Amino acid sequence: MKLTARSVSLVPIVSTVAAAALGASLIMAGNANAATTLGAAAQQSGRYFGTAVAAGRMGDSTYMGILNREFDMVTAENEMKMDATEPSQGRFTYGNADRIVNHARSRGMRVRGHALAWHSQQPGWMQNMSGSALRNAMLNHVTQVATYYRGKIYAWDVVNEAFADGSSGARRDSNLQRTGNDWIEAAFRAARAADPGAKLCYNDYNTDDWSHAKTQAVYRMVQDFKARGVPIDCVGLQSHFNAQSPVPSNYQTTLQNFANLGVDVQITELDIEGSGSAQASNYDRVTRACLAVSRCTGITVWGIRDSDSWRAYGTPLLFDNNGNKKPAYTSVLNALNAGGPGPTTTTTTTTTTTTSNGPGPGDCTASVSLNQWNEGFVATIKVTAGSSALKGWRVTTTLSNGTVTNSWSANRSGTSGTVNWTNVDYNANVPAGQSTEFGFQGTGSGSGLNPTCSAS
Ligand code: XIL
Image (cartoon, rainbow, N blue to C red):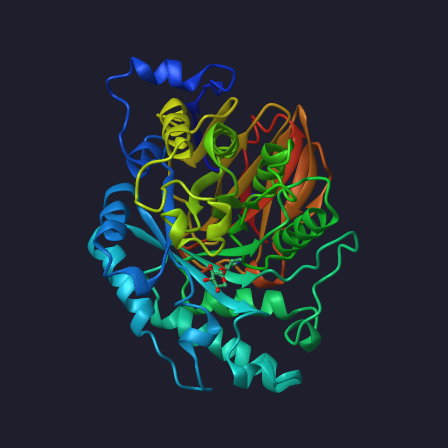
């Protein structure tokens, strides 16, 4: 094994405790620097604040005025779904989707793509398909649509709502599910191949309460995908709340536990039925939960005015029918302002280890990016080939005060002390100068990992 000289730099990026216990409105009253729109307030901590947009409302000047003023992320409410983009098999239509995407991009807003594969809102021709014909049609749809929008989408909801409600923890029965349990990972792989730059998300509802079987089932799927190297970058919690499905007390725990798997989490379709201060306080709690989780990268509400909502009867949004700000709006804005600048989380540090001299032929280097919180950590290790390609690699790490609980994209021996890692089949070959990554999650401290790499 050839070791190269290493220099270690420790860069603390955050050390802030969320001001959750403090009255946000009191804090904000005297803060002359508070942002005055949702998007600007979210940006203070590197997050976004988005809304669903319906192409049919884009001629409404009140609607567009609020959209352009307040939001910096957009999701098409229906226009990028399967029935809209492939109305007959092999004929793709993007007119309404493009109106939304082009408007967003022209104003510097990002776009969440919604959704590539779903049991609902399928075109009629697809509803009647099954077996390998359906599997191929689904994969073709994912490939075509993700390719068409390549480079324009921040994150795709690759698969939407694939798990059953209730206590079973099972997959939802659907024509797509009946093509085989691996349909979800097949969709993610096709999406990655078509648009390698987009974050790929699994999105669902009733996955907000950590104790629910459905939440646990989605968690296990994401954990399994990470372990097997299935490309997944984020989990979306739709977060449609009402009296029957209230904001759970463990909502922040759910966000944090998903994030701990090494994925971003996003609140993707937020709406909370109600009015006045009760609704405002629920919106406040949801916003603070996201701000308290460093990998909760943004919030999207499912529409602008109550009258724009898919469940307008519940007045679940931040603006009333006339476009006036509701108490819920003010509580979200104040919470976002209280949270910035910087992600509000308990101590998170990023440690980077680099070589001072580049690796030579047949050699490699390893560097670590560490996300540490109070009780545990996620480490991502980057393996970089030297001036000739790697055909296999081995990394050694040191865990003095931590224990590995879960890992992905590498074989492991040991869980603490000296832990050795070797490539798996699909990441053995690394071209000269290129990199591959693997990762692991652990309890305790991940500091002092000092990874060293050798070719094997
Ligand atoms: C809803 C739209 O808001 C409605 O206009 C449409 O009639 C049905 O779909 N989960 C999702 C969203 O992922 O796509 C749904 O949007 C709401 C529930």
